[in-house]
Image (cartoon, rainbow, N blue to C red; front, side, top):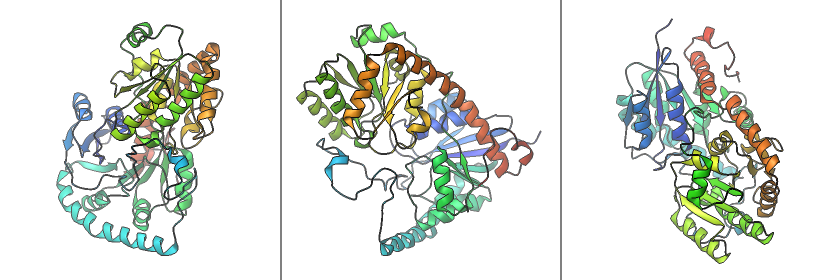
Length: 435
């Protein structure tokens, strides 16, 4: 057997919460075959994710970087009001699946700026980062597209090791420097087949793109309390429909849409409790949600529970999970977590959601950004316990069969083998397809 290859994971997010990209890194590093791969993880921020990996025996380094937050070029709202973003008419108009159209002059200027950053400050920053790379590293796994910080491209070149990049965000055409970096990656890991196809088309086939859907550590996500106990703590009777939406409280996650759908349900005479769980990363938006809930007379029917460490318990105690993002969802790991606990999903028919939820099998897909359509789907499932249970069983089976992190790790190991020239081990099931 060949010597185990050292893999350096780099998680550049400085976002304070334990979000999806950090969970992906933690899950993958824990799931790698330690006889063949030795993981190290570099984080740009300290937090509970560090303790989780150290408990699993994975070495961790925390580097407090002054670099820009990856993805910082994506506009984030701190809106004080609840005028829905899709109704405001303000700013640049982007519809689902449609790219932002820029003038040729603006596009050229943007390309030049991206080259200047790639060859200037990002290259200079790499000189400081090289010292953080363990000597035994044979491949660098950058858990980002690197579109805001190309430093690790230069680090990999200086260390003379291959690198892979992981596309987690919403796909859109990138600047010229990105195209050059992506073409030199051993793999660009994509969460959905649609994104693989778009990337290959955008780079005219000059990229090695591989499908790598996110996975869950299914055996770790076990409720600590039973359903009756959790519902009693919430003050929910056994037969009252309990709806849950989990995700950071920020405008693009669409909790405002949930509140409007809840008002529609109340108008239909449905009795229910809808709980919104998530860290208030946009405090003004969270406060506006509270005002809207009070104004609509929904205080008894809609509750903001904040960030919760017991999501498996809350999912298992609920009857239905609703995903409300008003922009195309890059993946939606939290949907899989709900499905694992036997919940059907109601979500928008766009982004990655249709690749996770089979309409009519695991849940219902509805028109994006349509509170009425969302309410109608919730209303039907709330009144159909047998259908909910059948969908929930299908959802649980789907996650265990298709989204177990152990299967994800085997696919990733095959991609690593290919990048490292260990082709004989990469030819089996799960190997990433060539571009």
